[in-house]
Amino acid sequence: MNTSKQAIKPMPIIISLVVAGFVGLFSETALNMALNSLITTFGIQETTVHWLTTGYLLTLGILVPISGLILQWFTTRQLFTASLILSIIGTLIAALAPVFGVLMIARVVQAAGTALLLPLMFNTILVIIPPKNRGKVMGVIGLVIMFAPAVGPTLSGLILNNFTWHWIFWFSLPLLIAALLFGFVYMQNVTEPTKPKIDALSIVYSTFGFGGIVYGFSSTSEGWGHLVVVLPLIVGAIGLAFFIHRQLKLEQPILDLRAFRYPMFTVGLIIIVITMMVILSSMILLPLYLQTSLALTTFAAGLLLLPGGIINGLISPIMGGLFDRFGPKFLVIPGFVIILGAMLGFTTVDMETTSAWIIGLHIVMMIGVSMVMMPAQTNGLNQLPADLYPDGTAIMNTLQQVSGAIGTAVAISILSSGTARFMNTVDNPADPMNQVLGFTSGVQGAFWFGTIIAGVGLILSFFIKRVKV
Image (cartoon, rainbow, N blue to C red; front, side, top):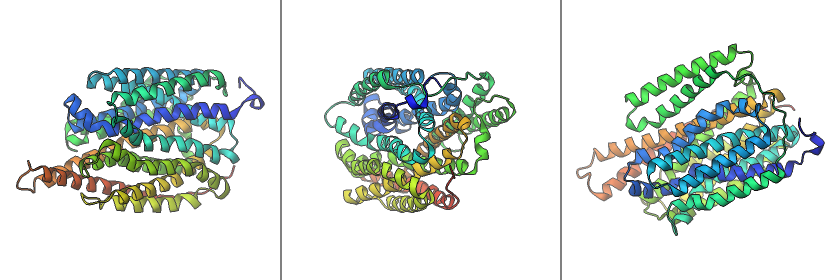
């Protein structure tokens, strides 16, 4: 340790990480409200524009797996500073982007900053906060992880009502700069870098493995049997197999897979993966549905999603306190019941659905999410010994981002194919009303995907047990 635990001031450190994390994760969904505008501005297709979200997640999926190694090579202050500088550069490039290609590059740079920040945030909390109090602190972190993506469409909708999409980034920039300056003053080094050996081949396998899988799923709009889907998935599967085999053989792996020997870590990880697929698929479907099927403005659509985001943020710390007191099963099982009910409700949406119904379903879903995410994650990480904290956070954050990319890609694929099937059954596909009806049919099908995986999560939740710490 560079600093004794007695000298560490947890609150300023947590504030630094929370502010930086909020702005970084806000970027994951902030552009969802602007997708229709970007399609028109750049003259691109729906399947192209969603790469602004999936490409962001793809970058995270490639970089986060090696974050466990990075956490052991650099100090807390160095990583915090690097992540904020990358986020600031990416945000500035995005704000100035004249063409789609430049905006895509900016998203990759932004994602690189977030890829450093997310594991740093969790690892730092695990180091400076004792297990008996982690629920409350993780609840605050959960506020950031869930609240930021949830209110992203709302805030961006408000911005788009008065400005161009560039201003989504112009408004984020001063917040990032403020977070960097705050971190310069208050961020402390909480771990001592051990600088383990870097295995280049493992990094190559990881990149092809996670990158191939995310890319393959992101291309499913071309058709599941298309070469651009099948080939990356095969490359990804082979890359992952080689990566896993090598990690098990190395004396100093870049990602220590011994974390999977701890059952509650594994159960919690799978629950997190399922929940992220539900959340991020819903967060891309709802703005598109509200603007296309219900013909709402970006501002009105954003307002409809605001109550759910606010309530999620308010109750996440409360759920943290309940977790510390009662354990995860008390929260996770009813949480999945609530999520499943909300997803079933979303499968019924059509052109006559009222705004009140959408608000209610979204609130219900976000309440359920707050009951599932933090308890499952904290309980799983609590079972790990301290030397596996960097690897456990890297594994959990990696699969969160990969599953989010997969959930987003599959939802868009189902939406597109469902729309196409409907249009094949009508006499006049050029009729605008038929186009909206077809799109709505596709949305309903995509929400059934979320319903099914939420059901799987409910079954798995019965196996979660409180970890003794």
